[in-house]
Every structure is written in C-alpha cells, then in structure tokens.
Amino acid sequence: MLLAFLGLSVNVALAGNGSVGTGYASDFFRRGALLSAEAVQANASYGFQVFGLDSSVGVFTNQGVAEGSSDFYLIDLSASKSLGDLFDVSVGLEHSELNAGASALEVGVTLDINTALNPYLSLYRDLDETLYTVEAGVSHSIDLKVAQLNLLASYGQTESLGAADVDYNSLGASLTRSISDTADLTLSVGSVDSDSISREGLIGLGLSVKF
Image 1 (cartoon, rainbow, N blue to C red):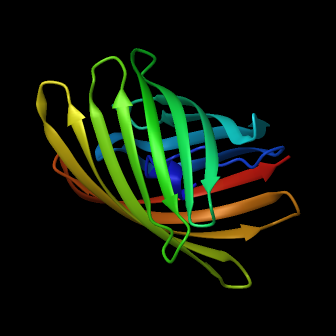
Image 2: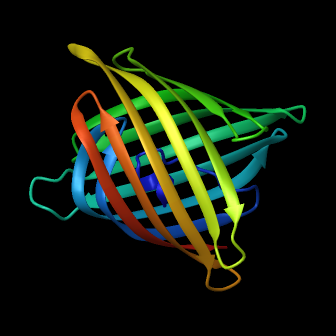
C-alpha cells in the first residue's frame, strides 16, 4: 500500500501466487504530481514463470472521491531475472490512463541491488511521446515481531511534454500486520515534494489478500 499511494506501484507477485487489495489514501501522487485527494484504491496481481523468467501481471486503480480529483488506471506486465546473488534486472510494459482519457504506454527497466538498503535504479520511456523518467531509491524492512516496518526513500526526474523537467522525491514508512494466514493490514504515512508542488504529507490504510 505504501508504494501505491506514493505512485510507485510495481507488480511484485511471486511466481504461482496472486494477491488482491483495496485501501484508502488521503492523497495520490505519480512522479511528483498530485493526481487526487481522498481516494479509494484497488489492485490485483499474479506471478508466473515464462522461459525461466519470473513474470507478473498487475492492475491498479485510484478513484478520487474529492471534488476535482482524477481517476487513474494502470496495467503492467513485467519479467525479471537474477544476475548472480547481487543483481536483479526486470523489464516491464505499463499502460496508464488518467480520467479514462489521456493514456500512455511505457517500457521500463529496473536494476535492483541485493545489498544494504536494497537500492534500485529505474528508467522508463514513453513510447508515444519519447519522454523519459529516471528514478532511484532505497528501502529497508525491520521485523518488529508484532508488525513489519518498511521504510522507503526515492528521487526521480521526469520529462514533460512542452514543459521543464520535474524533479521529485518521496519519503515513506508503513506498518504491516498479518491478520490471518493470507491477509495483511497496512498503515502507511509519507511525504512527496517536487518542482510542481510544495511538500505534501499523506496517509493510507490498505488490506491485501494472497491466493
């Protein structure tokens, strides 16, 4: 849920496993832009293997309930491969749509480094407008016995059609507690800052179920 309401949602289902989730977010950002306030979110993903690659497909939607908010939809397909014990590389295709109108198709490549703070570097290319987004981040998880604490920080730069590039950064933390063998409840807090907005705080609550 933390990644979802910060607009960093990436399909992470393991091969042979799926999940569905729903939640509430006080605000929803994507690459430094505020797309909606007071939103209801839902997502689903499923992992599988193709030609020895860990692959996954996912869908996500953010439905703004506040006046003037935008609805957002995302469909993604990705495949990843481990390069030894240190690196994981994934390639994905994303179709996103805003307010059931403006849409974009992007291809992305992400390099994950399996070391302290789990750093990653992602590059996205808009196939329609030839615009690029570069993003890097770190994360860390702590087992608190009663819940899992996840910390996240990211920085990115995205190109805009007919406008200056936008730099953005985000900070977030979440607490996830299992309420059954297949269900998790997550409380998230975070903040986003960019060239287009002042720093904004946000909070979210989500429920996910694995199958």
